[in-house]
Amino acid sequence: MATTLKISELKVKKIIRRPTRQFDLSGMRIYNEFEYDLPYNASFRNNERQRIFAKIIDLLPFFLVFFFIFHQPGFYSILYSILSVIIFGTLTENNWGTTLGKKTFKIKVIDDRGNYPAILKSLCRNLLCLAAFKLLVNDYIPPLNEVLKIEHKEANFTIHMNNKVCRTYIVKESQLIQIKKLLTQKVA
Image 1 (cartoon, one colour):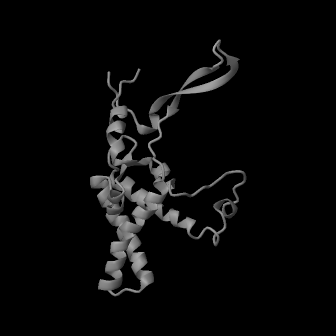
Image 2 (cartoon, rainbow, N blue to C red):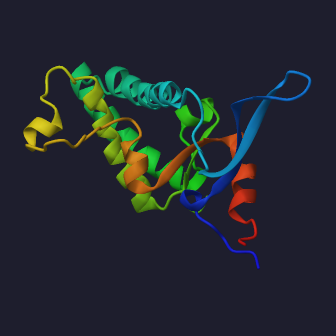
Image 3 (cartoon, one colour):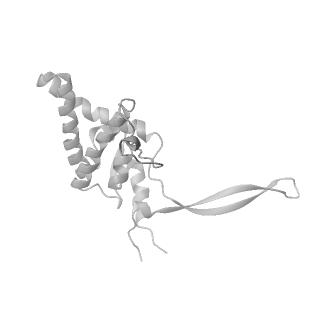
C-alpha cells in the first residue's frame, strides 16, 4: 500500500565503513559495515549565500521603482521594498513555489508534503524572514538569551528559522523529482 509521507519523516539508508585493527591474509585492513537510517536532508550546499542573494534580487526592482519612479528617500524605499517583497513573495511562493530571486538560483519552496506552501504558511515564513536581518545588527542588539533571561538554552535566529517554524524546505528544482518519489514510496 502506498502511503504519502512527510519530508520530516523521510529516512535514507547509509552504510558507514569503520576500520578495525585486523588485517586479512593479503595485508588489507578489515572494515566493519554499519547500516543506518538517517533523516533525509532536503537542503543543499551554499543555500545560505544563494538565499541572501535571492532576497537581494527580490528587493532590488522594488527599491529602484520606489526610489527612481516614486522619488521616495532611500530609507523609505527600502522599507516599502521589504513590505512589497513580503507580499509579492507570499503570492509567488504560493502559486509557483519561487520568487524572481529564487528562480535565478533554481530554488523552490515546498512544505512538508512536497507541495508549494499555502498562502498563510508562505506569509508566515516571509514575515519571519525579517528575523534574518538580525544578522546584520548582531553587534548592536543583545542576544535573545540575555533579553529573555534564558539560561543554558540557545535561541539561534538564523536564515533557516523561518523554514523550521513553518515546516517548509528550500530545495533545488532538480531535487523535486527525487523528493516526490521518496514521498510516495511504499512504507514497510
